[in-house]
Length: 466
Ligand code: ARG
View 1 (cartoon, protein in one colour):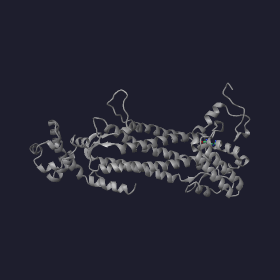
View 2: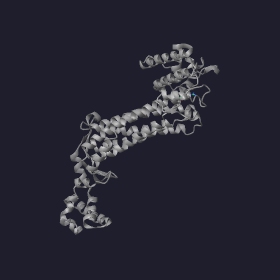
View 3: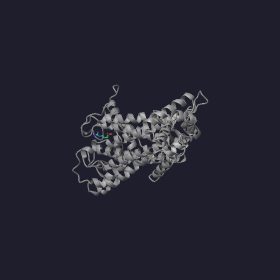
View 4: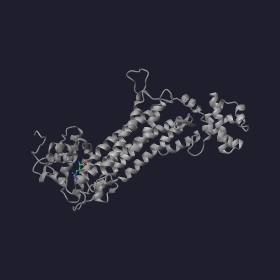
């Protein structure tokens, strides 16, 4: 019709009390099949487990259960081979599959929805999907950590400047810097594992919100679907989306870690820093400037963080005002999670590739590590240890030495003994042993410190846990 209304037929799944069908706009705003068809495998698995339970409890006949199972198997192969016709009129994946089942097996299909509602059905499908996604993320983080452990091992002795305020602070090793990311991604992975544990409860059987009077066995469906146990409160079950929020929070934190690393890669690969060279496989050229090699993959990892954080805020905002139990607002949960999952997976994969491939320019790191008076703290520590100065006085004396070196345009190690003694008479030639970056790094043997010996211990600890 010209006004966009199609009032010919009411919905075949719930249209009993409706005289006419929805307007075209209603259909458009209501339909979720465009995105929730991603849940087809989980929906079919859930329905099979539900039907088997209904039959085992005598709620449906074994014959109907077999017909339902066969029909669902047919639908699964139709969808996987691209032969299934999704219909927007049927709103969502649940009703698309059920309507097709009715065409395939007739009246037995109508028995599948006994003791179940789309509210617990969607909660189940989505939970299964998020759980699988978390398991995948766990594996991808393990691979990323492994890539970092390899680089850390190769570079346990590679000296580079450590920064605070992005100003040269103290020399560290590149291996130590890599291990900082191992700690971050290790915590991300622990959060993933914790989230899997939280959400490992089966929603099916909560029905619309109040449970059901049919003698169902929720423990049976929970076990069949690989959950630890059924959820304990039917109202919470159909209204809770914190498993999705938890996924998005974890994805946002992980993306934030990836983004900081991406930012470092962008900085390190500039000609000015020149600490690393990205492989051709993870960079692009410029269409106008032939000399350019751009860190696009790192930049896009950094940018994906914006989308992922956006998804978290979007779903938090959708959920914040909803009274218990189900409201249709909750249909908006899926696209956020699907989009964030795709982005975080891609970002982890791209980062793993970049870390595996990148060329470490040890000479450039070594040269930069010695500049910017990075061993000034070592001089102050030497004055405390060897000349008996209080640290505050040693700090002041060292400041004078830095000022002199700056005036002369040289490094601390290039000042002569006479010049140093003019600043403080207690200084002896032994001081030159600590002014090198290698000595500085090797001396930092405190637990978790940057000394190669310590970094190697941390690598071994992680190897045993990855
Ligand atoms: N497509 C819906 C969703 O994603 C399924 C649940 C519909 N429930 C309902 N009572 N209308 O949330």
